[in-house]
Amino acid sequence: MLKLDVPVGLAVDGSASNDGSNLLEELRVAFLLHRLNSSSHALSGYDILKIATNGSAKILGRNDIGSLAVGKAGDMFLIRRDRLDLIGADLDVKSMLGTVGLKGSVDYTIVNGKMVVENGHLVNIDEEKFISEGRKSVTDYLSRS
Image (cartoon, rainbow, N blue to C red; front, side, top):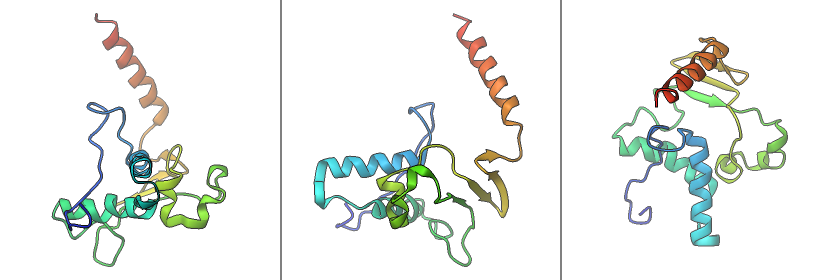
């Protein structure tokens, strides 16, 4: 499809219709599936990242997102490269998310110029409270049978 200039993107639709809603996980799955199918002719991890960013923006008909550039939306996430599971992988940061992936939360997320994740935790909510309330809701729902 890429060779034919067909717009290709990558997205998640949420845990209600899938097992999760982690786009970073899907980056690696897409890379691995292409590698399984096409071996050395498969897309690189960086190619998969470009599909998820620029490609998805094109599919949505948006030119204000999809890459970091002056005049575009500045939402972004940051990952510390000094994690044990990234040793060696950080030598090719462009492909790292596709080839090695990321286990766990990102370290920082900025949305509309505001920090919403810091050191892997949401800054605007009480995570422990939401975890407790969420578990109670699930238990209550499952006990209705």
